[in-house]
View 1 (tube, rainbow, N blue to C red):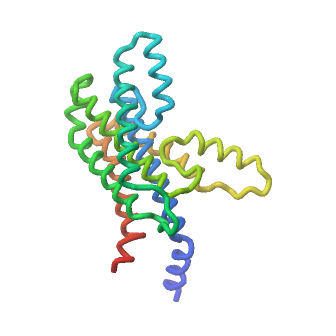
View 2 (cartoon, one colour):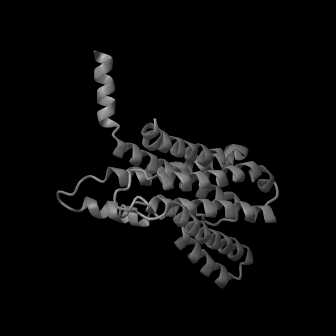
View 3 (cartoon, rainbow, N blue to C red):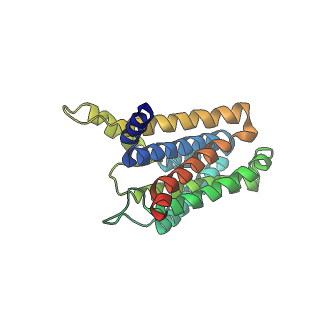
Length: 237
């Protein structure tokens, strides 16, 4: 009897909507970890924050810093490419969409394959900074996060993002000033997920650099597997 009540309580709490939001939060862990790795070991540029990269590009022009300019340009162009590919694979929000549309899973599987390739090649690139392979790995990460950004747009939820989170932060703070406004728990966890992913990725780069890519890779595996199991596998059985 106690077991049945416990199972029911868990089922009522861990609703499909909360499962979706939980997986989205984990996607921000991926973003934070990938960005931290890029900043520390792949030329000091972002792989998801293109606004920041455009500022860095301006600084590079003013300081005549070719290295930052090239790294920033590579990250920017390949992120744009990833965003285009992600939009083609994931498509756009449609009436009657599931809570987690299948094309989003397909796009994230593509992102997972890129992060897996990055993981395999990571050790060789980290041992030889400034080489062509470093630019290739930077490109893989930027394409991956571009795909992720476009895939999340398929949810069709205003303000929902796992990469460009300045707007999320602004909406969260603005919501706190409104009387009677619902508590924005999802936004808070998304922001915490980004910080946690950045901390985990940076810690691994500093103390266990060979294992650093396992942070985003593991988190993304959880999202892809969890989304398929929760929103698609059961419907087919």
